[in-house]
Image 1 (cartoon, rainbow, N blue to C red):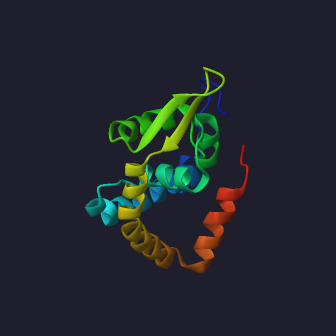
Image 2: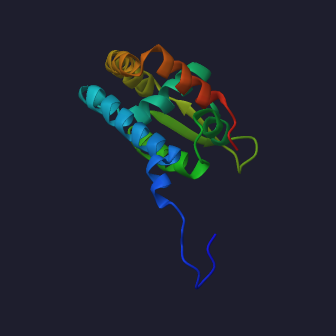
Length: 147
């Protein structure tokens, strides 16, 4: 690290290969592909991910759902609001009034069923673009605690 008054000889070109920047760019592109494929269903991929996990796992506290999705609780809370407005989920207090429980509703299950063929098409396209090695690398990275 250069001190004040000393010439800066840092090679900032190294940032052009930043793994964080590249992974975020890839995530945005993949999200756009899913959303484009799923547009006709009326369900965005971010909504589908939340709803499908609730459909698979049942009612759960918001903290647990955030952990499963690898999201911050505050981000998940923002993403839950439109689902609640659509009546696709319910949010209620648990035994501990500070803990909120999230559950999918019948209309939410219908939204997942309606969106599933579009999601499946997007999933196949992304899988093809990644190839088997890319899929394996993505799954491995997702399974690791990088903290």
